[in-house]
Amino acid sequence: MKLAPAQLAKHLQGPLAPVYAVSGDDPLLCQEACDAIRAACRAREFSERQVFHVDAGFDWNLLREAGASLSLFAERRLLELRMPAGKPSEPGVAALLDYLTRPPEDTVLLLSLPRLDGKTQKARWAKALIDGEACQFVQVWPVDAAQLPQWLRQRLAQAGLAATPEAIDLLVARTEGNLLAAVQEIEKLRLLVEGNQLDAATVQASVADSARFDLFGLLDAALAGEAAHALRMLEGLRGEGVEAPVVLWGLARELRLLATLAWQQGQGIPLERAIGQARPPIFGKRQALVGRAVQRLPASRWSALLGEAQRIDEQIKGQAAGNVWNALAALTLQIAGSRLPLPPG
Image (cartoon, rainbow, N blue to C red; front, top):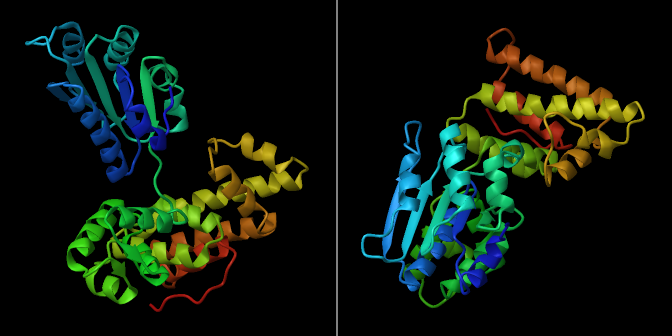
C-alpha cells in the first residue's frame, strides 16, 4: 500500500508493517525515510540486522534463507535489501513475490529502490509492493524549485534559525538540486551564527555554491516557461561538464513531442486526448507542463525549432559555424517562450 512520506512518522508510531519499500532519487530524503524506519525498529528491540546489496550477481537464495531461518537468539530482525538498479532479475522477482506472500514473523524487510518509472510500476513485483497488504510503499519525490523556499524555512526552524526573505533566496540559489548540501549548510550556519537570525550577508559569506542541476530539471523548467531558471540550469550543466550533445538530445526530444502534439491539435484532436495517447507515455505533473507548453507556440513554430536543433547538431559536428552553448541557450529560451539576453561567450 502507498504511504506518503509526510504520513510516515505517524505510521511508525503504531504497529510496524512486515515490509517497507522506499523509492526515490533524492539521496537525503530517501536516507531520512529509511533512517526513520530503522529508528522505529530499534525502539521496538529489533536488535538483529542484515544488509543485502543487490548487484548483477546477487544470490536471491540469501533472501529466501533469511526469511525462512529463525534468528540466532530468537530476536526481532531487520532485513535490508538495497537495490540500486531497481529491477530484480527473474529469480529476484520470484524471491520477492514469495517473501511478500509469506513474510516471516518478528521481521521487517526494508527495500531501498530508485524512482520506479511508469512501466516498472506495472511489473508484478512492483505492483505487489505498491498495492500489496504486506508492504508500505513510500514514494519519495524531490523538492522542486517552487517548494524549496518553504522546505528551507522548515529546516532552519528545526535548527532554531530564522532567515530573511533575501537570505532564503540566496540559500535557494546556492543549494538548489542538492538537499544534502542544504542540510549541511544549515548545520554550519547553526554553529557559526550568533543568535538565531540569518540575513543575506551572513549566507553570502558562509554558504558555498552547492547547486546541482540535472537535464530533466532543465527540460521541466523550459516547459514551464521559467526562462531565467532554465537558463541558469543550462549554465549549471555546462559548468558541471555535461556535454552539449546530451543537452541537445533532451531539448530535441521535447521539441519532437511538442511538435507532434501541436500538429495533432491542429488536426482537431483534443490536446488532453493527444497527451494521454502520447508514446512514450507522459506521466504525472508533466502532463500539465507539456499541455501549457504546446499552446505557447503554433505547430509551425515548434517544427521550425526542430530545424534549429538540427542546425545545433551540425555545429556540434563542426559542419556549421556558431557558438554551440549560445545556440542551446537560445533554443532553451524559445521553448520557454522568452528572449532573455544570452550569457556572454
